[in-house]
Image (cartoon, rainbow, N blue to C red; front, top):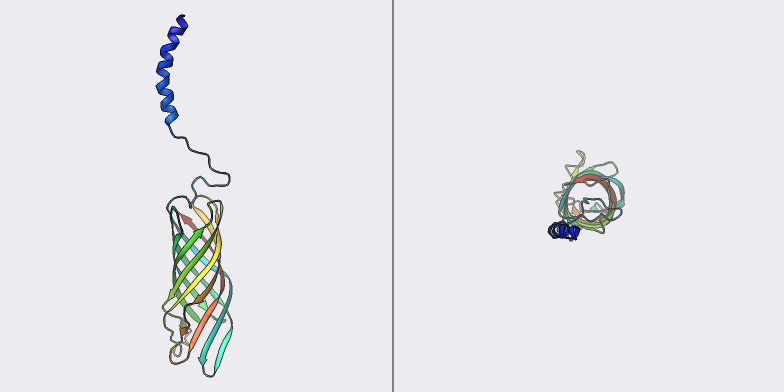
Length: 210
């Protein structure tokens, strides 16, 4: 009887404490394969450096005398890219690329692009689709060609797919393949005609999110 009388107040005092402890939220365990803080959870920013690693590009030119020029051309380049990853929906991408066109790299271009990136998951390997609008003030030719070739600015587009490989919660590797084309041919100026540039490019980037 004495033990029952003593135990009753202890039970009454412990009830509120047990209720308070039960109300404290407990972190849920992360799903297998997911990072504790993925760059694709919530709003984040990302910066990366990119370089072209593959190209299958073609050039075409009309109005150069009585002939048209069609064939493959080389493309080299590197650039920077910034990205706003939203909490839902596509990410917004803005970037700058310095490029060299031509088998002898006789033309340079500074391009900027603005587009959307559609992520398809939040695991350590994240596939995505991407579409960009490209713009440049024009091609800059080598000194021996510059007096004759003076191009106008041009717009283009790029669309493709890629994958982000998460090294940790901040650092990532980004591999991408895109098809590119111009919205309209580039005017070469001085009555020399028009030129087109289109094809597939592959790039690899490395960056961090914050």
